Image (cartoon, rainbow, N blue to C red; front, side):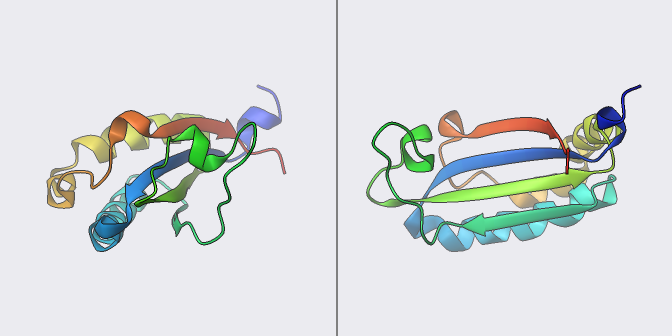
Length: 120
Protein backbone atom coordinates (compact mmCIF):
# COMPACT_ATOMS: atom_id res chain seq x y z
CA UNK A 1 0.00 0.00 0.00
CA UNK A 2 1.40 3.40 -0.92
CA UNK A 3 2.01 6.10 1.68
CA UNK A 4 -0.67 8.30 0.12
CA UNK A 5 -3.40 5.65 0.34
CA UNK A 6 -2.77 5.32 4.11
CA UNK A 7 -3.40 9.02 4.65
CA UNK A 8 -6.69 10.72 5.39
CA UNK A 9 -9.46 10.64 2.82
CA UNK A 10 -11.84 13.52 2.11
CA UNK A 11 -15.30 13.54 0.55
CA UNK A 12 -16.00 16.99 -0.91
CA UNK A 13 -19.26 18.57 -2.04
CA UNK A 14 -20.32 21.76 -3.79
CA UNK A 15 -24.00 22.66 -4.26
CA UNK A 16 -26.19 25.58 -5.27
CA UNK A 17 -28.66 26.12 -2.44
CA UNK A 18 -31.64 28.46 -2.78
CA UNK A 19 -30.75 31.37 -0.50
CA UNK A 20 -34.26 31.21 0.95
CA UNK A 21 -33.43 27.64 2.12
CA UNK A 22 -30.40 28.69 4.18
CA UNK A 23 -31.99 27.70 7.52
CA UNK A 24 -33.14 24.35 6.12
CA UNK A 25 -29.64 23.73 4.77
CA UNK A 26 -28.08 24.55 8.15
CA UNK A 27 -30.53 22.19 9.85
CA UNK A 28 -29.61 19.44 7.38
CA UNK A 29 -25.91 19.98 8.09
CA UNK A 30 -26.40 19.92 11.86
CA UNK A 31 -28.34 16.66 11.57
CA UNK A 32 -25.92 14.92 9.23
CA UNK A 33 -22.54 15.86 10.73
CA UNK A 34 -22.95 13.83 13.95
CA UNK A 35 -24.16 10.85 11.92
CA UNK A 36 -21.02 10.88 9.78
CA UNK A 37 -18.86 11.24 12.90
CA UNK A 38 -20.65 8.34 14.57
CA UNK A 39 -19.70 6.22 11.55
CA UNK A 40 -16.00 7.08 11.55
CA UNK A 41 -15.60 10.61 10.18
CA UNK A 42 -12.90 12.73 11.80
CA UNK A 43 -14.72 15.95 10.96
CA UNK A 44 -17.61 17.24 8.88
CA UNK A 45 -17.36 20.85 7.75
CA UNK A 46 -20.14 22.83 6.07
CA UNK A 47 -19.62 26.29 4.58
CA UNK A 48 -22.00 28.92 3.18
CA UNK A 49 -20.67 31.01 0.30
CA UNK A 50 -19.64 34.53 1.28
CA UNK A 51 -17.21 35.49 -1.50
CA UNK A 52 -17.69 33.10 -4.42
CA UNK A 53 -17.27 35.09 -7.64
CA UNK A 54 -18.44 34.07 -11.08
CA UNK A 55 -15.60 33.13 -13.38
CA UNK A 56 -15.00 33.74 -17.04
CA UNK A 57 -14.09 30.14 -17.90
CA UNK A 58 -14.97 28.19 -14.76
CA UNK A 59 -15.94 28.82 -11.14
CA UNK A 60 -17.88 27.29 -8.28
CA UNK A 61 -21.10 29.09 -9.34
CA UNK A 62 -20.68 27.98 -12.94
CA UNK A 63 -19.90 24.40 -11.94
CA UNK A 64 -23.22 24.01 -10.09
CA UNK A 65 -25.20 26.30 -12.43
CA UNK A 66 -25.90 28.65 -9.53
CA UNK A 67 -28.90 30.91 -10.14
CA UNK A 68 -29.27 34.51 -8.96
CA UNK A 69 -31.41 33.44 -6.00
CA UNK A 70 -28.98 30.71 -4.88
CA UNK A 71 -25.79 30.57 -2.82
CA UNK A 72 -22.89 28.16 -3.28
CA UNK A 73 -22.38 25.78 -0.36
CA UNK A 74 -19.10 23.90 0.10
CA UNK A 75 -18.59 20.99 2.46
CA UNK A 76 -16.18 18.21 3.24
CA UNK A 77 -15.95 15.16 5.44
CA UNK A 78 -12.53 13.96 6.57
CA UNK A 79 -12.06 10.25 7.23
CA UNK A 80 -9.01 8.32 8.48
CA UNK A 81 -8.74 6.48 5.12
CA UNK A 82 -10.75 5.48 2.04
CA UNK A 83 -11.90 2.15 3.49
CA UNK A 84 -13.36 3.93 6.52
CA UNK A 85 -14.94 6.54 4.23
CA UNK A 86 -16.59 3.90 2.04
CA UNK A 87 -17.91 1.91 5.01
CA UNK A 88 -18.83 5.02 6.99
CA UNK A 89 -20.72 6.62 4.12
CA UNK A 90 -22.73 3.42 3.53
CA UNK A 91 -23.48 3.12 7.24
CA UNK A 92 -24.42 6.81 7.54
CA UNK A 93 -26.79 6.65 4.57
CA UNK A 94 -28.60 3.67 6.09
CA UNK A 95 -28.60 5.08 9.64
CA UNK A 96 -32.20 5.51 10.90
CA UNK A 97 -31.24 8.97 12.22
CA UNK A 98 -30.66 10.09 8.62
CA UNK A 99 -34.43 10.11 8.11
CA UNK A 100 -34.56 13.07 10.53
CA UNK A 101 -32.48 15.09 8.07
CA UNK A 102 -35.47 15.37 5.75
CA UNK A 103 -35.25 16.23 2.08
CA UNK A 104 -32.29 18.06 0.61
CA UNK A 105 -33.14 21.77 0.38
CA UNK A 106 -31.35 22.07 -2.98
CA UNK A 107 -31.27 20.48 -6.44
CA UNK A 108 -29.24 17.30 -5.99
CA UNK A 109 -28.80 17.01 -9.77
CA UNK A 110 -26.42 19.98 -9.59
CA UNK A 111 -24.48 18.64 -6.61
CA UNK A 112 -20.79 17.96 -7.23
CA UNK A 113 -19.37 15.21 -5.03
CA UNK A 114 -16.05 13.41 -5.00
CA UNK A 115 -13.49 11.57 -2.92
CA UNK A 116 -9.91 12.70 -2.52
CA UNK A 117 -6.78 11.30 -0.91
CA UNK A 118 -5.26 13.93 1.35
CA UNK A 119 -1.61 14.52 0.42
CA UNK A 120 -0.56 17.31 2.82
